[in-house]
Image (cartoon, rainbow, N blue to C red; front, side, top):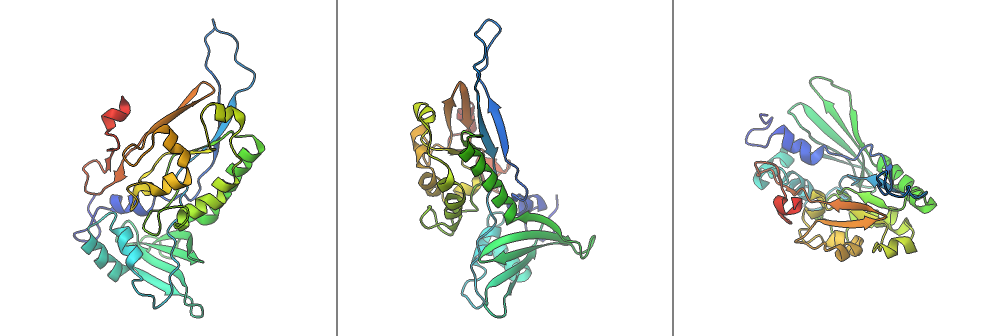
Length: 296
């Protein structure tokens, strides 16, 4: 698809980085039981359930004030994920508008390009966090703002999952990755606002694994895939390994992002689709390990 901006990436690339938002993620509680054949003994009375969720990251954390140096830094880095740095600098300088509270001088709104020349995204910011994102097509639907993201939606999902695990309705959480935005603003639970948020809203509230889980080698209640957002500006996955260190037990390292575990006759397999790279012909590169090795 032809780009709306000269010498810039396709709409699809920008959409991939900016529009894949966890606006209305819904937790799923899946049931798993050991499979049998007619010749085998009857199924046990009790199976188990787990909560399945993914792409739960918030949008950017922007605790910026008017007059602060390098105000555009985060936006250049963000656009730089899908376009050359010089092009990103030009786009931000020309098309990104920041609005500040006249009294507190805090950033409260950002207006920026979206996926076409006529689409504009508006980000509402409160206490540094983007709380809502909406898109307006100023040519086709002027004045109509389509909501693409609400922070409170993700908060509701997290609360419901925690409640399910605390009550015993779900044994543990399976997360498909993209729990944070990136590593540009800190890497670990101690210094990243994103991992701190995951820890405070989810990890700290999950109960410790019970004896049955520990007997199966499970030392936590949160088992996540490593997504492309987890490696952006954090190639050594310091954030993942600080938040869920028990993944190391399954062989997860910066060089090996896949793993598996078994629980009550059910195997869970986590693969790695690769970091996002707009220069790649396929857009995705699985290299830790290579795709063929993962399939084996």
